[in-house]
Length: 106
Image 1 (cartoon, rainbow, N blue to C red):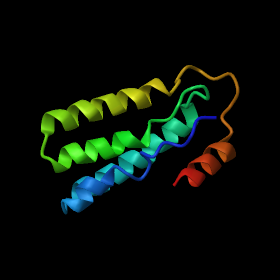
Image 2: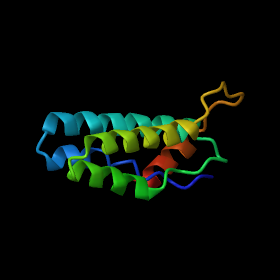
Image 3: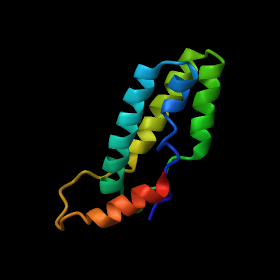
């Protein structure tokens, strides 16, 4: 099983730091939904995104380097997309396993 992604819970931080409650709330909701999708469809043989990605994105934002922040975020999203497999599953999902895995990662 892949290591938990440090993304979960991290995304609202820049918005909260900037005092943008609307954006922070939106990002909290988005991260929650994405976490459930990732937990359900994560391919066991794919590695989680490295935690260094998050720090690099935040550093670029802090340095007001928009081009670098966009480039790093796009690469980060590509890593997340690469680790999920949304093909039809033959067995029904094990909701207790999904939710226990998500709970441990938060």
